Image (cartoon, rainbow, N blue to C red; front, side):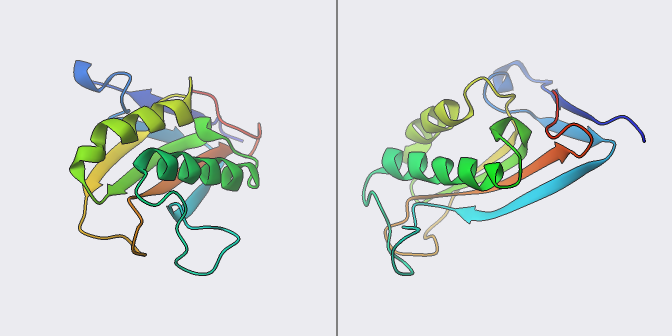
Length: 144
């Protein structure tokens, strides 16, 4: 089988430590696509949002769900290659990126897009993340 390799690239100084401008994958692997993840109460009714009015609480809850969903696929945040973040107020920028840094820890920074939109799926949602991850089928997780 061909070798598996994930590489992160930053060509602009200002992107280093924030996000990877390019992530490449080569070799055999499994791609994992998570549907948009927000602060929907997993044990509540449709549209029930936790941490109303609290961007940091919603963000932490969303990334906790991301971690648990990836774990069910034998993956971790280190396997994330792309995140698209949607927020309802661009002023959440600082809080969101602080939350993201905490969620990713020492993992390589994935390619990332940050968007400000008018409304998310349910009233009261302030942030939603769309996550793509890739794992090496030969080794269980990928190396950077």
